[in-house]
Length: 271
Ligand code: DGL
Image (cartoon, rainbow, N blue to C red; front, side, top):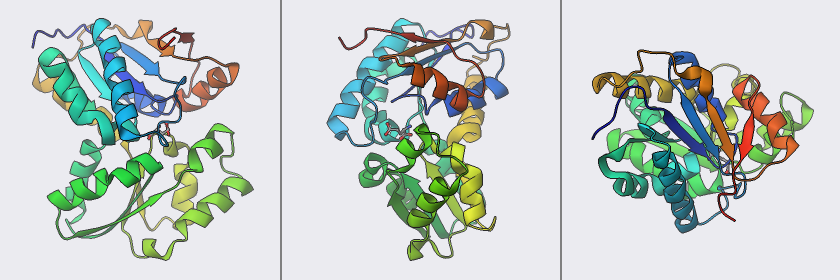
Protein backbone atom coordinates (compact mmCIF):
# COMPACT_ATOMS: atom_id res chain seq x y z
CA UNK A 1 0.00 0.00 0.00
CA UNK A 2 1.63 3.21 -1.17
CA UNK A 3 -0.49 5.82 0.56
CA UNK A 4 0.55 9.19 1.93
CA UNK A 5 -0.89 11.37 4.66
CA UNK A 6 -1.71 14.32 2.40
CA UNK A 7 -4.18 12.28 0.30
CA UNK A 8 -7.92 12.92 0.74
CA UNK A 9 -10.58 10.86 2.47
CA UNK A 10 -13.20 9.58 0.04
CA UNK A 11 -16.74 9.19 1.31
CA UNK A 12 -19.84 8.04 -0.52
CA UNK A 13 -23.53 7.51 0.09
CA UNK A 14 -26.67 7.15 -2.01
CA UNK A 15 -27.29 10.85 -1.46
CA UNK A 16 -26.77 13.40 1.24
CA UNK A 17 -27.25 11.09 4.27
CA UNK A 18 -23.52 10.35 4.46
CA UNK A 19 -22.91 14.04 5.03
CA UNK A 20 -23.80 13.38 8.70
CA UNK A 21 -20.73 11.11 8.83
CA UNK A 22 -18.64 13.57 6.77
CA UNK A 23 -19.54 16.27 9.29
CA UNK A 24 -18.34 14.15 12.23
CA UNK A 25 -15.07 13.47 10.34
CA UNK A 26 -14.59 17.15 9.60
CA UNK A 27 -15.09 17.99 13.30
CA UNK A 28 -12.71 15.31 14.59
CA UNK A 29 -10.10 15.53 11.83
CA UNK A 30 -10.20 19.17 10.69
CA UNK A 31 -6.98 18.95 8.68
CA UNK A 32 -8.19 16.16 6.41
CA UNK A 33 -9.47 16.92 2.95
CA UNK A 34 -12.80 15.23 2.15
CA UNK A 35 -14.02 14.14 -1.28
CA UNK A 36 -17.71 13.26 -1.05
CA UNK A 37 -19.82 11.52 -3.67
CA UNK A 38 -23.62 11.38 -3.30
CA UNK A 39 -25.25 9.07 -5.81
CA UNK A 40 -28.42 11.13 -6.04
CA UNK A 41 -29.11 9.74 -9.54
CA UNK A 42 -29.85 6.36 -7.91
CA UNK A 43 -31.27 7.45 -4.56
CA UNK A 44 -32.69 5.59 -2.64
CA UNK A 45 -30.45 2.55 -2.30
CA UNK A 46 -32.70 1.13 0.40
CA UNK A 47 -35.13 -0.36 -2.12
CA UNK A 48 -32.55 -1.63 -4.65
CA UNK A 49 -31.28 -5.19 -4.96
CA UNK A 50 -28.01 -6.07 -3.34
CA UNK A 51 -26.47 -6.82 -6.74
CA UNK A 52 -27.33 -3.34 -8.01
CA UNK A 53 -25.97 -1.62 -4.90
CA UNK A 54 -22.75 -3.62 -5.22
CA UNK A 55 -22.34 -2.48 -8.82
CA UNK A 56 -22.90 1.21 -7.95
CA UNK A 57 -20.53 0.95 -4.99
CA UNK A 58 -17.73 -0.55 -7.07
CA UNK A 59 -18.00 2.17 -9.72
CA UNK A 60 -18.04 4.97 -7.14
CA UNK A 61 -15.04 3.43 -5.35
CA UNK A 62 -13.15 3.51 -8.66
CA UNK A 63 -13.96 7.21 -8.96
CA UNK A 64 -12.67 7.91 -5.44
CA UNK A 65 -9.56 5.92 -6.20
CA UNK A 66 -8.98 8.00 -9.34
CA UNK A 67 -9.17 11.01 -7.03
CA UNK A 68 -6.28 9.39 -5.09
CA UNK A 69 -8.21 8.88 -1.86
CA UNK A 70 -6.29 7.14 0.91
CA UNK A 71 -9.56 5.93 2.43
CA UNK A 72 -12.84 4.90 0.86
CA UNK A 73 -15.56 5.16 3.45
CA UNK A 74 -18.95 3.66 2.57
CA UNK A 75 -21.06 6.14 4.52
CA UNK A 76 -24.31 4.37 3.70
CA UNK A 77 -25.61 1.48 5.78
CA UNK A 78 -27.40 -0.09 2.82
CA UNK A 79 -24.20 -0.14 0.74
CA UNK A 80 -22.09 -1.13 3.78
CA UNK A 81 -24.39 -4.13 4.26
CA UNK A 82 -24.34 -5.32 0.63
CA UNK A 83 -21.13 -4.07 -0.89
CA UNK A 84 -18.38 -3.83 1.73
CA UNK A 85 -16.82 -7.24 1.02
CA UNK A 86 -16.94 -6.72 -2.73
CA UNK A 87 -15.49 -3.19 -2.57
CA UNK A 88 -12.75 -4.34 -0.18
CA UNK A 89 -11.78 -7.11 -2.57
CA UNK A 90 -12.00 -4.83 -5.60
CA UNK A 91 -9.85 -2.07 -4.09
CA UNK A 92 -7.32 -4.43 -2.51
CA UNK A 93 -4.45 -2.53 -0.94
CA UNK A 94 -4.92 0.61 -3.04
CA UNK A 95 -6.87 2.37 -0.23
CA UNK A 96 -8.24 1.68 3.24
CA UNK A 97 -11.88 0.62 2.81
CA UNK A 98 -14.27 1.23 5.71
CA UNK A 99 -17.95 0.72 6.33
CA UNK A 100 -20.30 2.28 8.89
CA UNK A 101 -21.54 -0.97 10.45
CA UNK A 102 -18.46 -2.64 11.98
CA UNK A 103 -17.32 0.30 14.18
CA UNK A 104 -20.82 0.51 15.69
CA UNK A 105 -21.02 -3.24 16.33
CA UNK A 106 -17.57 -3.19 18.00
CA UNK A 107 -18.70 -0.46 20.36
CA UNK A 108 -21.55 -2.63 21.66
CA UNK A 109 -18.99 -4.69 23.59
CA UNK A 110 -18.89 -1.89 26.15
CA UNK A 111 -22.58 -2.47 26.92
CA UNK A 112 -22.14 -5.66 28.90
CA UNK A 113 -22.22 -8.14 26.01
CA UNK A 114 -25.83 -9.20 26.55
CA UNK A 115 -29.36 -7.82 26.79
CA UNK A 116 -31.59 -6.59 24.00
CA UNK A 117 -30.41 -4.27 21.21
CA UNK A 118 -32.67 -2.62 18.63
CA UNK A 119 -31.60 -1.80 15.06
CA UNK A 120 -33.55 0.32 12.59
CA UNK A 121 -32.67 1.06 8.96
CA UNK A 122 -33.80 0.83 5.36
CA UNK A 123 -35.37 -2.35 3.98
CA UNK A 124 -32.09 -3.18 2.25
CA UNK A 125 -30.06 -2.91 5.46
CA UNK A 126 -32.51 -4.76 7.69
CA UNK A 127 -33.37 -7.51 5.17
CA UNK A 128 -29.66 -8.18 4.61
CA UNK A 129 -29.44 -9.27 8.27
CA UNK A 130 -25.96 -7.68 8.44
CA UNK A 131 -26.35 -6.01 11.85
CA UNK A 132 -28.04 -9.06 13.38
CA UNK A 133 -25.40 -11.45 12.05
CA UNK A 134 -22.43 -9.29 13.00
CA UNK A 135 -23.78 -8.58 16.49
CA UNK A 136 -24.69 -12.17 17.33
CA UNK A 137 -21.40 -13.49 15.95
CA UNK A 138 -19.48 -11.21 18.31
CA UNK A 139 -21.89 -11.20 21.23
CA UNK A 140 -23.86 -14.48 21.08
CA UNK A 141 -25.95 -13.69 24.15
CA UNK A 142 -27.26 -10.39 22.82
CA UNK A 143 -30.79 -10.40 21.44
CA UNK A 144 -31.17 -8.24 18.32
CA UNK A 145 -34.52 -6.71 17.41
CA UNK A 146 -34.43 -5.34 13.85
CA UNK A 147 -37.03 -3.30 12.06
CA UNK A 148 -37.11 -1.61 8.67
CA UNK A 149 -38.36 1.96 8.96
CA UNK A 150 -38.56 2.97 5.28
CA UNK A 151 -40.67 6.08 5.74
CA UNK A 152 -37.96 7.82 7.77
CA UNK A 153 -35.76 8.71 4.77
CA UNK A 154 -38.47 10.47 2.70
CA UNK A 155 -39.89 11.99 5.88
CA UNK A 156 -36.52 13.55 6.79
CA UNK A 157 -35.84 14.66 3.23
CA UNK A 158 -39.22 16.38 3.15
CA UNK A 159 -38.20 18.28 6.27
CA UNK A 160 -40.58 16.54 8.68
CA UNK A 161 -38.25 16.75 11.66
CA UNK A 162 -39.27 17.46 15.22
CA UNK A 163 -42.92 18.01 14.42
CA UNK A 164 -46.26 16.22 14.78
CA UNK A 165 -45.88 14.24 11.54
CA UNK A 166 -42.46 12.84 12.41
CA UNK A 167 -43.65 12.17 15.97
CA UNK A 168 -46.56 10.13 14.60
CA UNK A 169 -44.36 8.10 12.21
CA UNK A 170 -41.71 7.49 14.89
CA UNK A 171 -44.47 6.36 17.24
CA UNK A 172 -45.99 4.05 14.61
CA UNK A 173 -42.68 2.26 14.02
CA UNK A 174 -41.07 2.25 17.45
CA UNK A 175 -44.09 1.35 19.56
CA UNK A 176 -43.51 -2.19 18.24
CA UNK A 177 -43.70 -4.29 21.42
CA UNK A 178 -40.56 -6.18 20.46
CA UNK A 179 -38.56 -3.05 21.36
CA UNK A 180 -39.67 -3.20 25.01
CA UNK A 181 -36.62 -3.58 27.25
CA UNK A 182 -33.90 -2.71 24.72
CA UNK A 183 -30.89 -0.97 26.30
CA UNK A 184 -29.52 0.41 23.00
CA UNK A 185 -31.03 1.43 19.67
CA UNK A 186 -28.70 1.56 16.66
CA UNK A 187 -29.65 4.11 14.03
CA UNK A 188 -28.66 1.97 11.05
CA UNK A 189 -29.11 4.68 8.44
CA UNK A 190 -27.03 7.81 7.97
CA UNK A 191 -30.17 9.94 7.62
CA UNK A 192 -31.46 9.11 11.08
CA UNK A 193 -29.13 11.27 13.22
CA UNK A 194 -31.41 14.15 12.20
CA UNK A 195 -34.26 12.62 14.24
CA UNK A 196 -32.07 11.21 16.99
CA UNK A 197 -33.32 13.59 19.71
CA UNK A 198 -36.94 12.78 18.88
CA UNK A 199 -36.23 9.06 19.10
CA UNK A 200 -34.47 9.54 22.45
CA UNK A 201 -37.52 11.40 23.70
CA UNK A 202 -39.81 8.63 22.44
CA UNK A 203 -37.88 6.20 24.67
CA UNK A 204 -38.01 8.74 27.54
CA UNK A 205 -34.19 8.97 27.48
CA UNK A 206 -34.04 5.45 28.91
CA UNK A 207 -32.49 3.87 25.81
CA UNK A 208 -29.04 4.73 24.50
CA UNK A 209 -29.47 5.80 20.89
CA UNK A 210 -26.30 5.47 18.82
CA UNK A 211 -25.49 6.55 15.30
CA UNK A 212 -22.41 5.94 13.24
CA UNK A 213 -21.09 9.52 12.80
CA UNK A 214 -18.74 10.04 15.76
CA UNK A 215 -18.02 6.33 16.16
CA UNK A 216 -16.89 5.98 12.54
CA UNK A 217 -14.88 9.22 12.72
CA UNK A 218 -12.97 7.86 15.77
CA UNK A 219 -12.34 4.54 14.04
CA UNK A 220 -11.06 6.35 10.96
CA UNK A 221 -8.75 8.43 13.16
CA UNK A 222 -7.45 5.23 14.78
CA UNK A 223 -6.84 3.51 11.45
CA UNK A 224 -5.02 6.53 9.98
CA UNK A 225 -2.94 7.00 13.13
CA UNK A 226 -1.95 3.33 13.13
CA UNK A 227 -0.58 3.68 9.58
CA UNK A 228 0.91 7.12 10.16
CA UNK A 229 -1.53 8.58 7.62
CA UNK A 230 -3.05 11.48 9.55
CA UNK A 231 -2.53 14.67 7.58
CA UNK A 232 -0.13 16.95 9.51
CA UNK A 233 -0.84 19.88 7.17
CA UNK A 234 -4.17 21.60 6.67
CA UNK A 235 -5.81 20.29 3.49
CA UNK A 236 -9.38 20.89 4.58
CA UNK A 237 -10.07 24.20 2.84
CA UNK A 238 -10.57 22.32 -0.42
CA UNK A 239 -13.30 19.75 0.33
CA UNK A 240 -15.03 18.51 -2.82
CA UNK A 241 -18.69 17.46 -2.95
CA UNK A 242 -20.07 15.66 -6.00
CA UNK A 243 -23.54 14.38 -6.84
CA UNK A 244 -24.67 12.29 -9.81
CA UNK A 245 -27.88 14.28 -10.18
CA UNK A 246 -28.65 17.78 -9.05
CA UNK A 247 -31.67 19.67 -7.84
CA UNK A 248 -31.77 22.84 -5.78
CA UNK A 249 -33.59 20.76 -3.21
CA UNK A 250 -30.47 18.67 -2.66
CA UNK A 251 -28.39 21.79 -2.21
CA UNK A 252 -30.82 22.86 0.47
CA UNK A 253 -30.97 19.54 2.32
CA UNK A 254 -27.21 19.07 2.10
CA UNK A 255 -26.92 22.13 4.39
CA UNK A 256 -29.24 20.39 6.83
CA UNK A 257 -27.05 17.25 6.89
CA UNK A 258 -23.61 18.90 6.86
CA UNK A 259 -24.72 21.73 9.17
CA UNK A 260 -23.07 24.30 6.93
CA UNK A 261 -22.97 25.52 3.34
CA UNK A 262 -21.99 22.83 0.82
CA UNK A 263 -21.32 23.46 -2.84
CA UNK A 264 -22.53 20.37 -4.70
CA UNK A 265 -21.02 19.82 -8.11
CA UNK A 266 -22.97 17.66 -10.55
CA UNK A 267 -21.02 14.98 -12.41
CA UNK A 268 -22.34 13.17 -15.48
CA UNK A 269 -21.31 9.97 -13.86
CA UNK A 270 -23.85 7.46 -15.12
CA UNK A 271 -24.98 9.02 -18.41
N1 DGL B 1 -28.27 6.87 3.77
C1 DGL B 1 -28.72 5.55 3.41
C2 DGL B 1 -28.32 4.51 4.46
O1 DGL B 1 -27.56 4.80 5.38
C3 DGL B 1 -30.23 5.50 3.25
C4 DGL B 1 -30.82 6.18 2.07
C5 DGL B 1 -31.16 5.26 0.91
O2 DGL B 1 -32.09 4.42 0.99
O3 DGL B 1 -30.49 5.38 -0.08
O4 DGL B 1 -28.73 3.38 4.38
